[in-house]
Length: 300
Image (cartoon, rainbow, N blue to C red; front, top):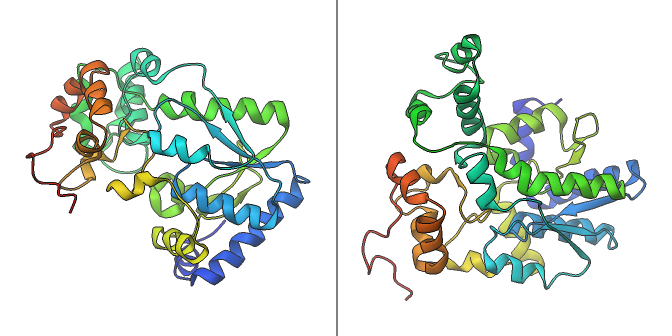
């Protein structure tokens, strides 16, 4: 286990020291599993840096990309330029997931708690989910979603990404490296504090060798080694992920990712609002999905 002070110390290290520390974790994971490893590659900047770092040590390690159908087209085009990438497909589409389980709103934890509350018949569990303080509860801010007229769930990532990856791991006996970083969410921070970079003892064994990196480190590494990256980052997006994921959208600032989609990918925006039912979801959550004006965004 790692304490908060040690995590913070590592996050403040210069990039050279972070690279050395990450390389050590990469080598340990590779040696432990006798080379039966792979890089979970999304095409985003974090996994791009991870893949470059892993292959600078072990060039033969395969990358695995899960084509969920909800990636930005620029990401998929970029993935096609990378050698030795295995493409996986989920058994369900995103449309199937939201229809059968619900929309991914607020955060993975909160959408999961809301789904539990709405499905359970246990008053004891409901009471626990509504407690005023502590971990494992629906926040005061988001309790209005309990009565939302649409389904809510955190099953999306599990069904579209994790399940195909688990099947691949079972078939091949390989264990993953992922590009997750502790600063990105409370859950990722907890995982790092509990397991460190290499989670040998976790139920789902995984190496997260960039856990103590920050976003600035990623861009510094890209510039230092002149690594090509997906063009979507040149269109105003700082994070990519799934196109229609609503995790964190309410914290995006003046212009959220759904509004940006109207400018950068108008056809995908129209499909999202009209065909996927996002108009009802975003209206209920009071989150704007149209650009504030026609001239707010300048390409100059």
